[in-house]
Length: 101
Length: 351
Figure 1 (tube, rainbow over the protein chains, first blue to last red):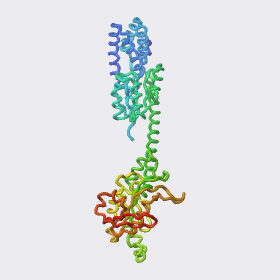
Figure 2 (tube, rainbow over the protein chains, first blue to last red):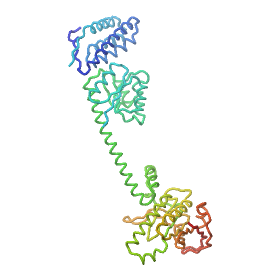
Figure 3 (tube, one colour):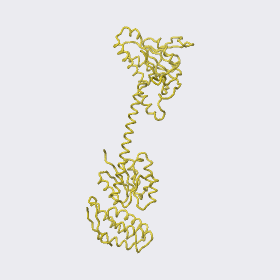
Figure 4 (tube, rainbow over the protein chains, first blue to last red):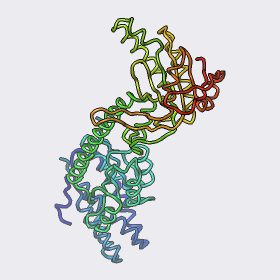
């Protein structure tokens, strides 16, 4: 993962929304894991689609990029890509650094 | 001015929270609902100024909701911005067909969101201002019409004409028409002698008071004033609108007029007849009268000449139609009237 994608800048007036946003991403990560374990590709596609929309909107561009990979992987049934992306998502959420401007 | 209100329809709480926060930061009021059915209920009961609508929703989807909102009179004018994925061309085409006013791409760019909302806000404000001006112009047009009409007819009839004007046009602009009418004349007794012996100023004052009293009485019974000349007044019933009880109304109007002028301590006689007449605007382009012409008017005019103070002379046809109001009428026998070959059966009603 590119070091630069770990640094996120968020508008100051959105600061109080970020804890809930991150909490929801962690819940999302758990749901992704469960969906992958049960090979529920439709749910994986929907979750990927949502990540794609919400990530960039909050300034977390990498969440959108990962969401696109999950959406694509679910469409093509590419388990390896899905596994790698979910691992990367977990790593990203653990390391992301946020600053407010 | 009240705050610009935006309704956010979005099932994802993160997106919903973000959109309402960004809109709120610009000084607008934002409310959020999470599904299509709740959105429809909210929009119908309290229409917002703008709706940000996600396409994929639980229950009613964004396209169906957009279509419904555009069909309902309460929300048809509310701009709808559909929130779709940037690469989703198909959704945009469906959105246009559903009546969406604009689109916003997901992921949402703050600058793009605000630019679209502000543009629609300006448009909305211009539209509202134009609508307010149109309504004000409509009110003043109706007021001008009302003022013009109450010179001829009772205020109640004027309101009715104005209310029906868009369906039927104005009765005063129609060509002449033939109608069954009841004509009622009122005439001040002894006016000619009074005119010779009274000061001009006093005479005019008396006439003004007399006409004011009997005009108000005529209007109370929805009569239409057709002519005011010297000391006589011609009131028509069953015109310009149908009055099934026209003769009874005319009789009651005569009683009301007689009672009203008691304060003047001078007698008034009345003549009333029913029959066909022609009603229309007669005159030149420079001077025009809304006029009633016909046998009923001629007969009523002759009868009023013969009526004693406080007496209503009625032709037999009008008497039958007047019912209760003319109870106790006394026959005056057949009276030959000027300009008529056949004599007329005349009855006298004490007012």
